Image (tube, rainbow, N blue to C red; front, side, top):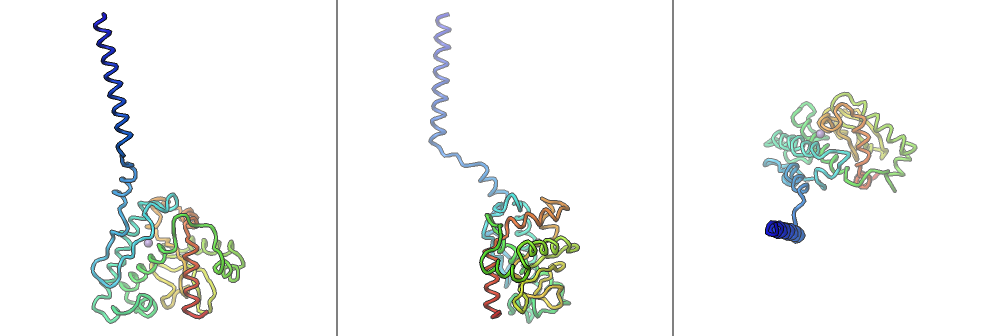
Amino acid sequence: MNALKTTLLLASIALLTSCRNKNNLEEVVQIPEPEAQETQSIYGNPADVKAEKGKFKMRGLPYAYNALEPYFDARTMEIHYSRHHLSYCNNLNKAIKGTEIESWTLEQILKSGDPNNVEVRNNAGGYYNHNLFWETIAPKAGGQPKDSLAAAINRDFGNYDTFKNQFVQAAGKQFGSGWAWLVVDKTGKLIVGSTSNQDNPLMPEMPIKGTPIMCLDVWEHAYYLKFQNKRGEYISAFFNVVNWNAVEKKYLEVKKNNSI
Ligand code: MN3
């Protein structure tokens, strides 16, 4: 019995020692966060998305695909940027290659391109609209506009809530695919409206005309994975990621460029 007790005691000491050693080892070795790795491998890096050879490039995103969680989900952001937006960019490059408009700026193509050329119209619109969209949303954003943009909104809509209601209505009532817009018209006034498909307020004969400073993509590809048919909830979520500083910067640029 004494021999058995001694054996058990020795075995216990050995086990304790091995546990302690293991604990010590874990304290020393830095084990990488599995979640961080997983995010990287699943969603990738927007900077790795490159257009095929052509005039227009993918500009990257100033944040990670998952940076707008919980409002815009990472999976939708990744598909939206790396597949939908990339297609518009590649197809625009193909549509203008070797034509007289290849040397035009994007704005010139939108303003003066042939509206009956659907390849150019849809893909130039798709490329421009998404660039503006990514630029005017951000993590840790939302809230309300400030300074000169707030003053212009109050001047042209009466107050922020009236502006927001009009924008929400425009986004909600756009039938089928399209975009809601806040634009500066040729007199310098801010107006809200919507366009179909990838049309853009710089194009001729649009229901809303002017220079866009903020937009919301209401194609189902922008929200269906997270929100399904609930476009209203997606529109509400958008107001948590609007980058008002970027929108104001756009507003001041338009004012300066158009001397209005
Ligand atoms: Mn889209």
